[in-house]
Amino acid sequence: MDWCENCFNTGRIGRDSIITYCSCKYGKKLQQANFQLLYIKSGLPVNLTKLSLEDFLIQRNHRSGDALTPPQTGLKKQAKRVVLEYENQILDALKRKDIFINVGDNKQYSGNNLFFYGGEESGKSMLAVDILKTAIKKTKTSLSAYYIIWDDLLAELIPFSGIWEDLVDKCKNHGILCVDSIGKSDISYDNFSHVKARLNTIFKNRLLQNKPTIFTSNYSPQAFLKDPNSIFNSSIKKSLKIKLDNSCFQDFNTGGGYR
Ligand SMILES: [Zn+2]
Image 1: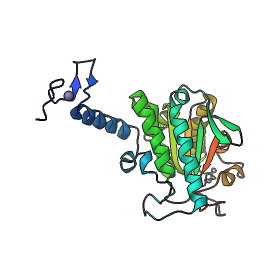
Image 2: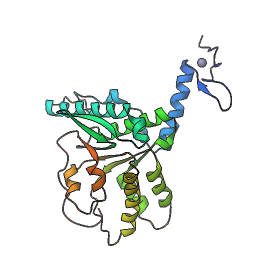
Image 3: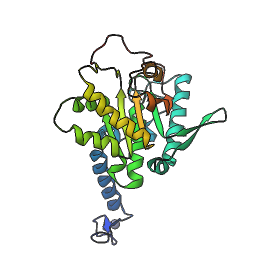
Image 4: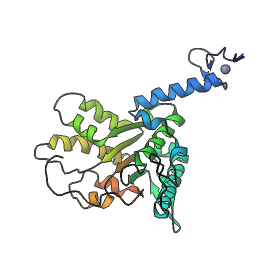
């Protein structure tokens, strides 16, 4: 009944190096499973890889299901449109070219960095991950995208020995880098100058090579741009800033030191 003559239910056609997926349900399942492996290799959070843009609801909060008000739905609608335009041109972004996004009033953004900002559950990470998934799907390699949460990146870069070199390479070299939930960046560099140097290696390299980087934050871009020590400043200046709701923080709490 469920027998496929083309792939004998293996999902794949061909042998050894030249394997293509069968168009039957087994082929689709196999392809999905293989993509899932690539997503995990790229550090994507498993729960978000299961969502698609269809789950990014314009009229409702995607978690609570609560109805949203017009200013919020307007922002979400615009954000979704930007993501679709970005995904359509993603192969250019991966070739380190600038891409072009219509931002209204006959204006166009050109570049390939995005900065999503808004409060908790506004859908920032979900949109960023959708873009990374698209990069992997279109290129069929995990090298096209890398995802890391800002706090995890810092935690890995602080020790003097360990995997930091490997991580810096990953962040420098992968096609699109997403740094999720960036926050206060003026960690006390008196004690952490080596961390600053490592972070600079990543972000300066990406800027020099015009490699796409996606940021998400609970803080507004102004909070970073006001801080002359922010290692993100140049990257954020180059980014298309996408606001998801008004509940983001406008500023960092004062008080120095690391976290
Ligand atoms: Zn088949």
